[in-house]
Length: 250
Image 1 (cartoon, rainbow, N blue to C red):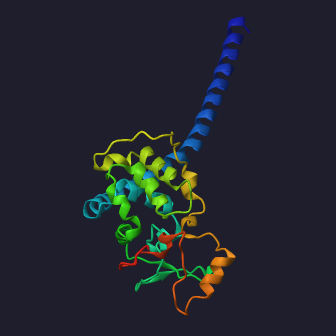
Image 2: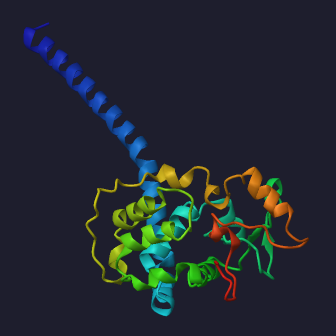
Image 3: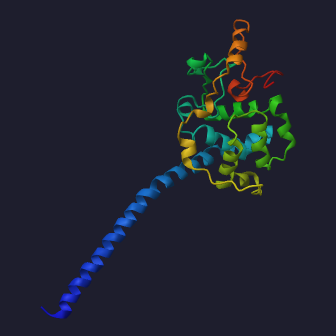
């Protein structure tokens, strides 16, 4: 066997080994990137499906479309939560003052269930009407394109208990450029908002719809209420749902 032939054999196996390593690395990359691409596509599909209704509600009621979509994405786990799937409820609005069908019950806290809608669009409309309550009236002094102030304002008005709620909304809006839906621009914040991970919205899918356990004093106060009266939920007005009266969100 000639020396040149032996070298060719060695080179052949060396190249084959390199190709095998490349194929393995490429396969691993595809396996890792595919789920991420699928998750990102879910976000894009959600935005595409509901952006028209969000923009219409912005026009009719003044709630920024970017805020509506970011809340829907965050609170419904991009439409994948059980409540969104089974009750078309994307915002966790409770069934107080509700004459329609009710979804589930929080038996451990002896609370009513959640509103069940005929379509996700009905949920979007009810959520927008909810934000027209007196509790949130101060928000309408803000520019409709000022999504950062709106996000912080929702938290300040008592919409959510999570102190990071504004940051999570802003991250979604900026990552998916929701501010551009109505011609708005990205705003510079005081601090950088990291991109939100899909895991934050896909685990514990219904966590936005459960309150902190009441303190002993609050429980005693509820027990002293007249029979049939509503339990007080001062920290989480969103859980009370939309009330079509002047007492809404007080």
